[in-house]
Length: 335
Image (cartoon, rainbow, N blue to C red; front, side, top):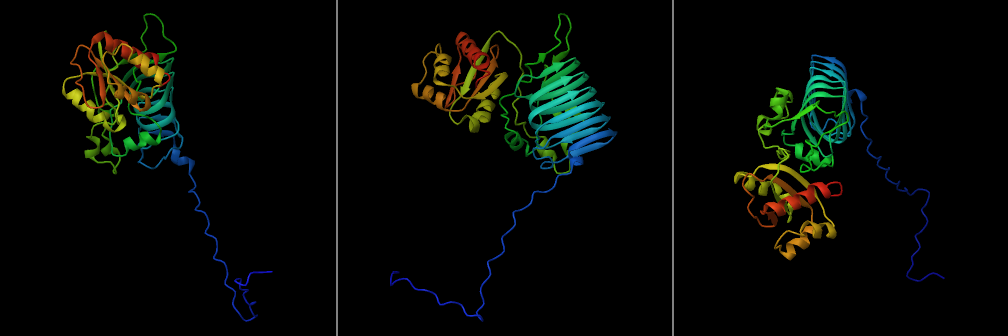
């Protein structure tokens, strides 16, 4: 028996209007991609520009290009460059691999997770690479540290899951290394991406201004040299937010940056890192285990970095060498 509180609606008569359910809103359809927008094929003497937002994480193919200017101002999944001759190429942050194959007399600026070259010759390469660059049957390759800038570049690094602090451009693995034969050289002086490409980004893409090009690159300039004496520093507290500002202070003081690395450490790694670290604030050490860290290696012949809030600086040469070896060599594959 139903409750007396329940009230049955009277049946609708034939003349009553029955409201219709509103139509279902169709799911927005994804725009159809034209494969031609993601490739440059059989090109000669042309300028090709993909502005920010034009690639949006897709794969891009460059195949057979002669005397071309190619600018990919966006992040991508993978980029292949085959049979490029006398070309100037910019490749924005790439989530996985950039392949350069059968390229001659080219100037390339690129950022990627992995770089592979094969059968290339006489190439200037300004590089960000978060793993060891690998070259095969390649000669006369001149490599320098990535230095380029426009407003959306830092955000594109994040979209491609790349940390600007993890640049191993100088740790080149040569599959054809032989005694007495050098296939690549590392740049000893700082230069800009515009210097390498011979053209400013603002000249190639109307949505990029001169002011953007003149900004500091989001990728720190590192020299990558092997030196006998080093200084070692860790940015611990709010490292990702503060590292650029802290580094600016240290560079202004005269420190010479060789290498950086972002990562996290286990407790056992932290204990090993600070094993010979002298007097360390216990709270800072605990935070080093639970925080994202940014480690920096400096030339020991220059001025040692000064202590800043939320940082640790090993200013004793022997301790700095020990901690640098732990962080950049022993822990490198795992952090």
